[in-house]
Amino acid sequence: MKSAINNLEDIVNSTVDLVETKTEIWKLKAVGKISGTVSSIISIIAVVLLAGVSITILSFGVAYWIGNELGNLHYGFFIVGGLYAIVGVLLYFLRERLLKTPISNLIIDKITESDN
Image (cartoon, rainbow, N blue to C red; front, side, top):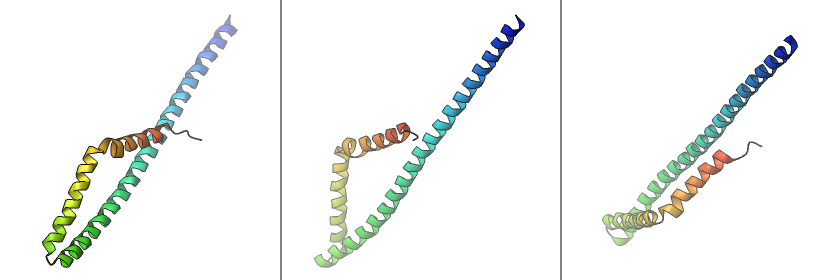
């Protein structure tokens, strides 16, 4: 009888250890996926910021160039501003297909990618 109780205690202790180990593995996998996703998003944000600064500087150059060609700097800035307004309206109407869906898919892919 003593041996059966000891075996049962060993099984219960092993089961508790297994559950604790599985829980710890799940936590570590979750932390790995979250950190991978966050680092990907941060790197994308960095690239977008650098691209934004580059586009801003190029926009000033193009606006000055167009303004000089037309004889008035204001015209160049209005033309470049108008182009950005058109792009903004297009992005607004196409935001689901061009922005929301690809970003959602990126996050889902990062979270669900296998560890292999």
